[in-house]
Each structure stands twice: as structure tokens, then as C-alpha cells.
Image (cartoon, rainbow, N blue to C red):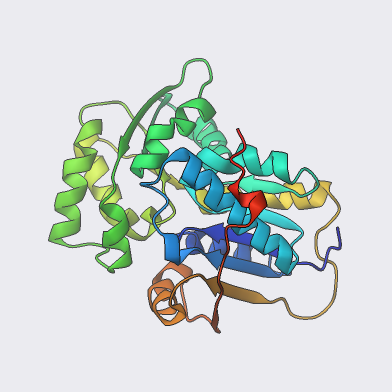
Length: 280
């Protein structure tokens, strides 16, 4: 696999840009190609077979653009499709966002009681319970679906966001949870609201973990072990693709990526025959 090829990153929308930002920071020499499947957002409320088909479809498209590795920057797609993607593309390093942050949580938690919040799809898949299944670790998980539209609307704090957080995070009240995994790539944007409400609910400080930095670290290890870290001279490229209106994507994406995007290309993704196969 030529080391100068880009790393592909995909999500159902703009949330995965929080992971893209972490990748850009951790791997400053790498070309990055981001695909936001905004025409089919959100994945979080879709069925498992549908998410697998969409993920295979997105990966087929990125492979056609020429990538050397893939980051599944979506918790729901990681939960339902990572195994299928690894089976479908055994020659390509593929990293999801669940395992890296789960391993970090296991290493970080003192009380051994770890909380997880995410979309209905992610929580319903029980992917974090499986990833955190080690002796002595307890997991409390609850879905927080309204956090996604709040983040996309830019309601990162304030009375409404705090009220919604209090309703959801009541699930942790009075527990000894000391580590909370933000199991959706949108959630880091409202982390300050989540932090104050979870501390209030449990009565002590809780460590929040998001998947971006942990995933970037895991990917760097994979690229190094596969001997495909970019060594070419010259500036790296950051490219952005969206399957729906690129102007809308760019507007919303500024907050998630932490700055202006150079340009967003509109692309059509077809459900090709390979992508219609739902691999178990």
C-alpha cells in the first residue's frame, strides 16, 4: 500500500469531524479524505443491516478514490459494520472508534464503574458493554439522542442543553461512575454541559473520554506496524466530501472541525452490488 495515499475517514454527517480534527493533530504529515454521508444521516436510528450496507457503500466509494487506511468515525457504524468491513477489506488497516476509547476507559477508571452515553443505535448494539467486558468492570449505558441535534444547531450550553442533559444523565445519579465515555462523535462539542451535569448527578468529579485522540493513537500504531506512515515531502491535503448539500455541510462543520474548511465536494454514492451484501 503506497504510503503517500490518503487515510479515508467516514461518518453519517459532521460529527466525525471531531475525530478528523484529532487525526489531523496526531498525524500532521498524513493526507486525510473525509466523507460525510449527509444524504443518509443519521445512522444512529437505523437498523443494523442498513448501517452495514451504508458503511460498505461508503468504504467502496473511498477505496475508489484511493485510500491506504480507513477510520470509521461513527460509533453506530463501528458497532454494526466494523467486522464486515474488516472481512471485506482484509488488506487495509481499518480502525473504529469504540475499542480505542474503551481500552482507555478501562485503564483510567479507579472505581471500575464506567458510564457510556450515545445514540440509540450505539447503546442498543451493546458494543461498549462487549468492549468493556473485563473482570471487575461494571458498565451503565444510556442513550442521549437529542444531544446530536443540539450540537448541530450550536446549542452547546445554556438552559435548554442543561435541562436535556439533566434528564438523560439522571441515569447515573448516586452511582460511583468515575469515567464517562462520550459514545457519539457529536458529544465532545457539548462536553462542558455534560461535565457539569454528570458531576452534579453523581456528586463527584467524573472523567470524560471521547474517541478522537484514542482513535488517532490506535491508527498511528497500525500505520507504523504496516510500514505505511507517510514519509513523502511536501504539504499534506485535507479533503472533504459530502453526499448532500456541501454548503450546508461546510456551515455546520466549522464548529466540529474547529475552523473553516477549504472546500467541500459534493459526491453521489450509489448502492453498488458489493455494498448490497450485508456481511455478518
